Length: 247
Length: 252
Image 1: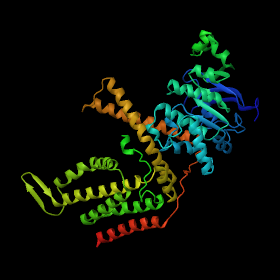
Image 2 (image 1 turned 180 degrees about the horizontal axis):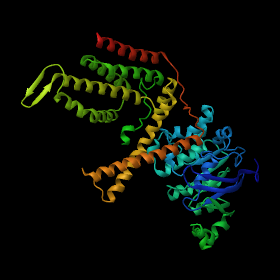
Image 3 (image 1 turned 120 degrees about the vertical axis):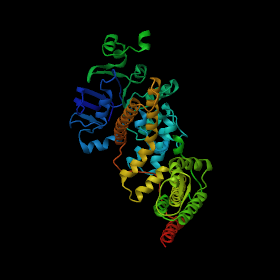
Image 4 (image 1 turned 135 degrees about the vertical axis):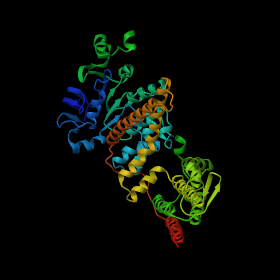
């Protein structure tokens, strides 16, 4: 899929939790191949729900979402989604469940049915990418919050997805870890959507930003313009990042 | 909490090099037989056999001690109490109001022997086989996938639950709660257990979602390749042979 071609296409997505509130209302969003979109909004705005709909975790009607040519609303296509789309959850503890770091990172590639040598290679590469080379035999529950975050990211990277969804990626990271993450995201060629309250991170890693509030996309445009719009940001419970306030 | 689950580095003992499938099958059969023994003598022999297995496993003594301590804490009170409780047939010794029964003593010793044997067998197995290999072996032995995953997730999430509980306890403590025997205290503890269950349920949901997002389709996959050698068959034969011999002797 070449640049400019839409890799994520959401057309009129609404989602209501069973016996719960309406989380998303008539979402229209397009993300091109290789594009980096920052999704910002207050707590409970619908960022995580949108990610879960895209990943096929929450059931959506067919024909509403198209991700890397697949429809998460279609059961057979939904099963092929993990090879194309990787999601890093907000809480890394939800994502790490194997007894060793190696086994955890290998979990996804093994599920893709790759040969053993390829799995080992991918695990090695992914751990190197996140700066955890040499930690293969460590036990996940002995890791710090930041290290767990890196393992969760490595577990997704090892699947070499075309699209990466990151939900609050800088959470639990210390300044150095955050800086490493930003450096990594800048160099990562895949299409990505980053949902975060860390607006400086969005500013550094995303060319485009969308504001979501109460299940609606209320603004969408260049990150510098959107995040610098004080009126817009304050109207939706956000703040202009410090770096934009100074300039 | 985590001490009980400390992951041992690769065990390079003769037992550690054995095929996990044969080891698991043999140890499980031996464990079933050890629990079904009725006599002290045969249970004692089973314990000696299990200790030999632990010796072959060359496990670190601190690791073994920690696990045996847990068993001690679990069964210790029962073992200490049983001889003094009114029991069935057999001689009874009286010292004033205190009485000691042979049948209670017999039961306590039997319980201690069996529990230690099972602990030794489990340590020999778990200490020489990494968990992924063990789970893969269980799957190869046709243990239902749901059981294999239950073990895997229990292993991982018992720590999260412990952390969750610790956080809740701190939250209660900093707000002035001190557990005592009052009705209110029990009610708070009950609520705490309920919250813990709800949080665990939510967590389980999210873990399931995360697993599906990484392509999980209900089958447990591993890089472990099993290869059966003559030594594996020898180990299995020795375990099953000893178990069968003890079982027959116990019932003779």
